[in-house]
Image (cartoon, rainbow, N blue to C red; front, side):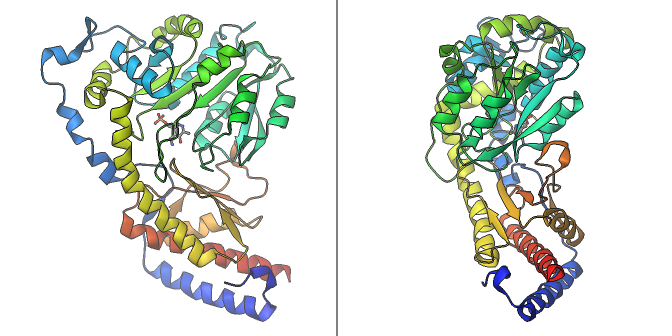
Length: 426
Ligand code: PMP
């Protein structure tokens, strides 16, 4: 297709009339499609239905003499800690296995910092005049909501193809008010990029001015490749330890996108010193998490190899969905110069940039035809994308047959808004 910028006024008017007619026709169809959240599709959930009945004898509930049915063991069943250590490449003693949501563990750790302070804090963060936080953008909206909720000042740092702009990060951490940073190092949400070895090494060896700086390592997509072989990732905990930063790192993961997002198991991996400090604080809020569910996961998968084999089945389901979306983008937007998008090999998202000042209108227009996208702006702190151009596309949930149509609608909306914008500028 011709580049929009090179069209004559007449050509643009013709394009505008064509996409407007297509928009009117789509609207009349009364669609109801959702590409807003990275939810596994029904076919993925069905794969693990047998997990519900896997614990059959009394012994299945017991591990190392600990009874998963009863109170106690706030840091998780030993077998579950071993399972996550196997996945993340760290030691079981560094794993705190919680309930179904890693987001809750992240929120809780920050809330401990706020109310009590962390191991190396001079005082609780609530008593500080200002707390600042580094936010790679575009990033995960729920991360930004957590730090916004605590009133931290969020500082955006651009994502590059190799991870966050590290020159900027290294400059920012010289300020003692900068207390932490969000990271999704593998198949980042929403760009799908994987941090390079150099970025990881620079992050692990940072010397922040704040003694209680939190490097949050949300490894939500650590084994979630759908378009390539499993890509091993070094253990961030030992790398930080090597640079004298053992207590700076807080890694998180969960089985939300492995088994059931509503009933999975989450983990926080950090130094043993941090866990010794945090366990009693966490224990104030909860006596123990759902350890029976931890045992179900252990019995079902056994080890990291078992989980990786299962993730290959997820890949078979997800790969065609991503391919559909990418091929419709290419067919309907390729060569127009009005949008660019990422080509992830794992994770749950595609990040798409429209022309400046168009994303919000595209989001609204798609919604008006019945296609829900993540709200424009959500991938930036405070919901504010300064160039109003980023959209997060989540292909996993709609059924394969709906996906083509939903993506077509998004493309039509992008063409409509772009043509209108360029015409208004002529
Ligand atoms: N982190 C990232 C980067 C995510 O994309 C998501 C889910 N969209 C989560 C955390 C949420 O994980 P959980 O269900 O374990 O809270």
